[in-house]
Length: 188
Image (cartoon, rainbow, N blue to C red; front, side, top):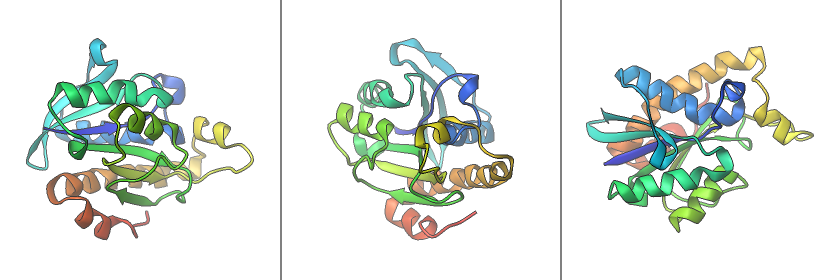
């Protein structure tokens, strides 16, 4: 069982914000596969089961708010007898320019509180990440990631989210090294 977790904040007020591109990506996968989300109270997460890239996959959207993502994801991994190697986390990255993708097989939190929470709860940094570049406003980082995308950015975000489906499929089917070679220079 593979697990693809998209990070974001629950609630309509966070839709179309830089911090929610992880949610948008797993929503796009669910939509492409025609699967429905179901709230699982025991994990405080929206979950959808599917077959993706030839494997059984659990799509996850933690409903804990970003900074507590690990409180939802770690128990899901454990319950499904999965390991950190079975986990792919899709999240925003303010240090990447808008329209970029980057694949990582491991690494630090890099200042991302959702990733920090997952590392703390999982007890390891060794899980795959698909980082989606959202850029940043250095004068107001929190306001930027929780604010709505500018109209001119929405088209770029749509392209990146669409491409994130293919990148996720490559990570699941061929592994991180192949996906890094294919996507770490990719720009929308």
